[in-house]
Length: 107
Length: 266
Image (cartoon, rainbow over all chains, first blue to last red; front, side):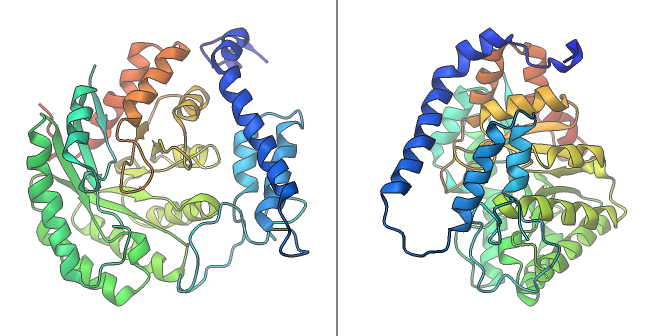
């Protein structure tokens, strides 16, 4: 990275000093959530679209590429182009597109 | 220190929230009309709400030295019935003459439907006709990216200067396009959805401080009326200068909102 790309006022050690404990706790929360799912009885053979999206998002964390937050938000976004006439009968936002696939995103 | 919370729903907050905000340095708030958590059964319900926003809340805020301004509209969640929405929109022009009204907002989309889009376009036309600024609500979660683009396309099809439009609730996947198209962008600090103070600081580091502000959007749900001063602390902890912090929490809102002759905080 060039100097102009280092836009955080803190150096790397300072970022770790400031944020490691907070994000260590969040990471363990994620691990415990996945463990909780393992211990929960399934209600369908079909994978829940939110769970599929969540696990695809986890893969982004360790793929070595930058812009992780943007790419995870993109993965959790509806990329369809259809515009329904009315919201009648629609649920509120669910956090992931209903048609999430194992490749990520929505079909 | 002083700051402006440019998007907060004080009708849903208690009076001691005003007190705590004043103690934290808040000198002005702007309150867009929004969904009350339930659908109102008549246009008269909106008439009463607009009176609350323009008559009652400025007095409640003034007790603590906070200036209260407002934006009027029918929100997208109650705009799926075009006939009903038009009854409500017909009430708005009379209120635009009131001295604390800054423009039309928060208009936008919720589930990105044709009905919502029709009413969005009619409220954009209302802003055009009365030369009003616009505050935009973008949809939640998975609907945000698609809806944000639909909203910007609708505004771009009008004669409204994007520099007089604030697109709110941006996140990492929408902020670049909002700024690239000349709009102002708002970051909403929510505990679970939208952005945290940490991510707001990250976005400032990635996209700079021009045409960007942050707000609490405090309302009846899980939200924090002190989110803006907490984000100021987060930026300071990270080493941002006082000038940068002041720009995004005071200077930028003052500059955008100051385009309305009604925005007077002196």
